[in-house]
Length: 510
Image (cartoon, rainbow, N blue to C red; front, side, top):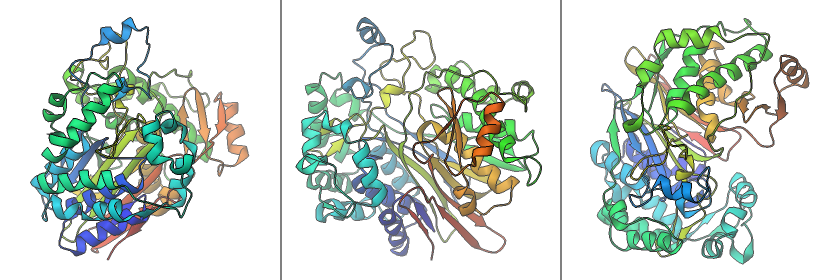
């Protein structure tokens, strides 16, 4: 079974499985295709995190987040008077980490090789693809991010405007780069013509990036971090991602009775908001490139710390609003695949903001991400900018396990929302007994930027109840996040798939 946010990606995964590939092969095939057909959400110029649960084996995590150029410095940005790195600037571009991550995953865990894996993406780029409805909506909404760069606009705004649903596009430059990776692996991207075009493009905009920055990059294989929730284990990638925040929220909520009928819907939304505030305070103060963190995830998740945070939550009153330093964004794709042997893959890929930095390397056909906007420019902060450092990341895949076996592979896209989304999804499944599709379909809420934002499917009476508790409530102007999930029923040998109705995607099994 495969679940993605784009139907063509799901089909690519299924076809890869049918051709003899395993879950790893299929997930990479799907996400590579989305780098072609979903260019505002993801791309070869972005980053990747993954969790892999081999059947009968131990979970492994991959951190494919890129590093800042070695020639840049915090002092340079402070001298410019900046309080943050502008999200549409060349200084926000970090080394793309996705391609190296895919190649490592393929070599270590795949079956059919990167050349076969990338064929669906190559075919779409060379022969064309049709714009899906949600893609068209987002493309038009965020067209201004690429309109600022004429070279980018020439390709992504044909005839000066965003393509409409049903329009067909081709991307021959990206096809050439995909073919180079298919033939030569990571060196087809991080060395040679592709790397030279990326670096030349960035230098042309005043960037500090060098060929050595690209050539020296390598994704990191690590152990996941985990926390308990309702007798299950939630597994996340370790920092510099915000998986730790998801674990804090889950551990906080584990101390409350959230079973069906125990609380009102307003109580549930209130609790999730308060747990989010507590977790994100910890997140913003502590999470960074692990080489620069001052505490370990285990220390943060210690029950003495969690119990203290939990005790501060009041059911009748909202705590003080937070002013977060982290940038807000919503643009990511998440893919999950479970193969016939029971191997489970949970993978997420992103350019950060819509169309990333907006900077496009035309010969390579690659849009560059703007993850550097996630750095702090406060001297002494664990997440303060430094050369060769990885910034704080929002994108997080998840795997839920019980008794040492994976029982669910899932992710909830949506930038800052993702950690909250993981906890909300788990509660819908484990507390309320909903299947994964019904859990994904439930109305969402998110405390962010001083407001408790509610999807418009939440009743007005609940909004009024939350306002009376002191929440500054507001209706969301677009859907919150997007979930993909697969539940593994080991006892009956059944897979349950879910794909969020807020996106174009689909879940398919065979």
